[in-house]
Image (cartoon, rainbow, N blue to C red):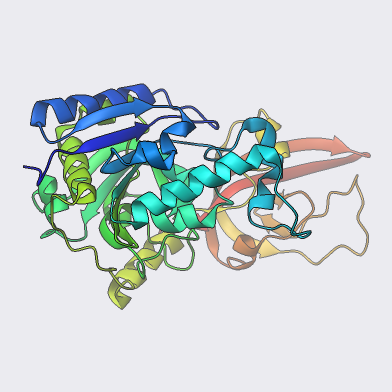
Amino acid sequence: MPKQPRKLLVYTKATGFVHSSIPVGAKTFELMGQKTGAFTTVISDDPESFDPENLKQFDAILMMSTTGSLFVPKDAEKKENLLYENPTNGPIPAQLVRPEQLRQSFLDFVRSGKGLMGIHAAADSSYKWKEYGTMLGGQFNGHPWGHIVMRIEDPANPVNAAFENKPFEISDEIYTFRETYSRERQHILTSIDLAASKIDKGFNRPQDNDYAVSWLNKYGEGRVFYCSLGHAENTYMNPVVLRHYLAGLQFAFGDLQADAQPSGPLSPERLAENNRVAAAGYQEVSSGEKWYRDSKEKEQAFTGTLESLPAPAEVGVTMRAHFYKLGDRLVFIGGKKNKSLDALIGKTVEIRGKAIDIELEGQQLHELWPALVRPAKR
């Protein structure tokens, strides 16, 4: 039960990608408060909700997939840098005055001892506003996966009670994080078990391959809970996820005592395990290149020994330089070299890519356009 009557502001305004699950999630928390009697809810997409006088009525704020630049009008986003870098030290544009005030009100609210909860794309927001990323605990770096097995990092933490100390499997759009995410600052509740999830591509944190799902954070005297689940509408119908959400919100309110001390760095054993899984997985080569995406050829798997080719003395055939070869096919990656391929020269590899047979300037070329590469499985 709450220590006192609690009131939650659910903020739903998204000026970037608008998730269809936002109204579902907002209604879910409204009903959660009604059914548990733990809190009342106000749902708003009005930035003026963050006026300091208005915020006095609330105990916590929930950011419901709030993409875009918080409180900054769309027609002023190109000027947003002036909130952080003002080389002339002059007054900021009038369009940014109120956003700056509302942002400061938001920070002051949490820092003073109130609560903040972020769901899913709350982390896909306000990248230039580093203090927001520090407060929330992480910023979006990609969503390469759709099905994971979650590792329960702190089974004794009451915010994790819903998982009953068992791995949890779920399908949703799964985020990875950059910059402000750090085990040196946050208390990690759950993370992706890379091996159990059978993940073989999409790794984008080469320093540790550490991908958290939910965590606790402290900001001044305030309490922060974040969970990256919540893209799909049916996530808000999963009873385990809802119990995790509710416990995290109760922590943010101050009604549930939980260890929020930073987790500290990964153990050498975990780091080695993460890196082993990532090293065996696919590495990006050209899948994001427009010329690759525009090709209508079917993508397939190619296996063989990757060979290096000497740099051409001059580039012929309409600038089609080749630096690698696999079997009888020249590997083409836009006339460039690639670090992932360089690391695998002389080794047996598996490449996901497209076989392209073309005639250019009277020459018949048999090329392999690689999307992804990994060491071949033995």
